[in-house]
Image (tube, rainbow, N blue to C red; front, side):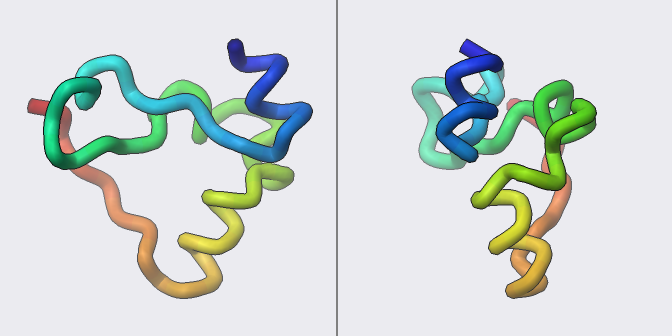
Length: 56
């Protein structure tokens, strides 16, 4: 799953936010070594839209 997400410049959704109205990028994935290549994280940072949340 992680390998596929990295290849596609995608992300992994936090398992604790599945089934909720507020999906989040997995913190473990975001902190990984290839996070700088991730399109969603780059866009969120560039737009100032990146924020940390505590999972429900």
